[in-house]
Image (cartoon, rainbow, N blue to C red):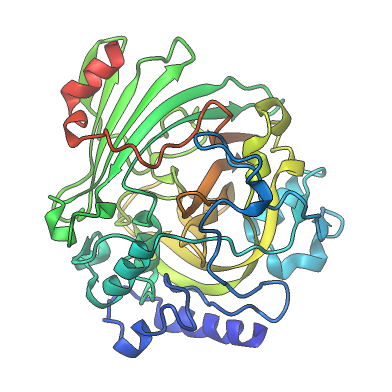
Length: 454
C-alpha cells in the first residue's frame, strides 16, 4: 500500500499541478462510496497503522455515553488510547518522512517540544445528504474562470476527485460545517515568556453553500457565507464587531466586510479584512487570510499539488479542548501533553506568490487531511524565502452532528518566539450547529451597530 500511495503522489503532482479543470469521468465518480470514501479519500488502510475507513463516528460513541451532554464540550471517545511513540528533538530523525517541514522546525527550534503519536482513528463522517450532494458535485461543479470561484455545485465538497490544487483549496473553503451555527471562542496571543490575555469572541455564520433548500451555486446571490464576530472581552475591546459577506465568485465581486468600532460608534467598510492585513484579535501574529487555515480569494498565488503522503497530524485532539487554558498555554508552544497526533494521509499543496502581486507570505505549503479536506497544518515563508510561521489545526469529529472539522488553531511565529492560539473553547463555550433562529437580515451594517452598542 505504501508503494501505491507513493505512485499516486507522483501522478497527482504531475497531472494535477495546473489549473485547467476537467470533468470527472463517470467511472471515477462511481468510485465514491466504493474504493473511495463518499468525499474522495482512499477507503483502504495502508496495511499498517492507517486502518480502513468504515464509516467514522456518526453518533455519540458508547465509550462516552455516560459523560456526553448536549451543549457541553465533547468527551474524548479515545481516552483509553496510549501513545505509540513520543517524538523529540533527539529521535526526530527516525520519523523524518512522516514529519512536515513545520514540525521539523518546531522540534529543532524548541528543545522541549515533543509529539505524542497515537493509533490512527479514522473518525471523520458527515450526514448522508452531504455525501449525496458531493457525488453530484463531482459531475457538475466547475471552477469559474481563473479559479477564483465555484459554479453549479452546492452543499458538501465541490471536487471530491480534484483535477488541480485550486479545486483542493476550494474543497477546504466550502467543506460542510453545518448551515447555521453560533459559537463562543477564546483567542490568546502568547508572549515569548508565556504571558497572555484572553480575548473572548462570539461569532455566528450562515453558510449558504450548505443551505439544504438551494439546488445550485447560482441561487446564492454570489454569497457563500455570512459571518459576524463580536468581541466581548477584555473590556477595552468589547463591542468591536466585524461583518463579512464572503463572495463565491471573486471575479464578479470581492469580499464585502464592515467593522463597528465602539470608540467612534460608527460602522465603516473594512476592505482590510482580507489577504495579508493583520488578523482580527491576532496581535499581529497572523493574517486575515490565515484564519481557518486559509480563507478568501486564492488569486494572489499560483497553486500546485505537491502530492499525497502519510504525515503525522493533530487529529482527534479532544484533550486540547478539555484542558484549562492555564494547563494548555505555556511559553513558546502549547503543553504538548494535551495534543494528540496520528498518522494520516494528507494532500500537500503549494502556493507561490504571483509576479506583480504582494503578500507578506511569498510561499505557503498547506496540508489537508484526506478524510475531511480540512487543513491540518501549513508552513508560511517570508519574502526572503525563510520559514516564518507554522500553522497547526486540531482535527476533531463532532460525533453528535455528525461532521468532521477542527478545534483549536495555532500559529507559531518562529522568528519572534511567540504564538497565537485561536478557537479555544472551555465548558461554557459550546458550538451550536443548529442555530435555526439566524436570518440573513442580521447580517447588515445597521444590525452589527445594534449588536455592538447593546
